[in-house]
Length: 144
Image 1 (cartoon, rainbow, N blue to C red):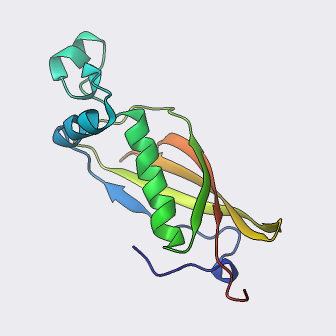
Image 2 (cartoon, rainbow, N blue to C red):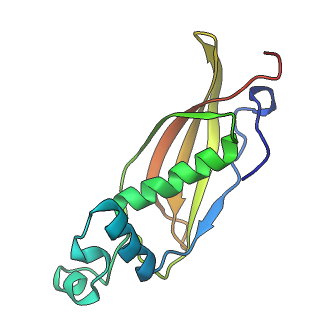
């Protein structure tokens, strides 16, 4: 986890520190057990191929969790993740590198809170945005 980020440290257009993930089929099996999503396209190669896929694919909710980690690692222990949403626009497979990235798009105050909006995404090894999304966080202020 990074040091604490304060509202005063943030500027619109700044990049969040990226996170590189290399998910494995084993991780997908573990995630299936933890989440209760046992759909075989996520861990059974023959089943996935039988459903016109090249092989197993990552759970959408796991991809969302990677984006959540991107944001919560960045905001530090005193920050709060207020909202996170994403869309699944492309399939990612175990054994392939994916990178979580983000950019600050807006910094503002509302109802006494110091808020920051971010555009977030997962990119595959080819740089394609497979999981676009956005998040809003509440950051502490150095002034109070």
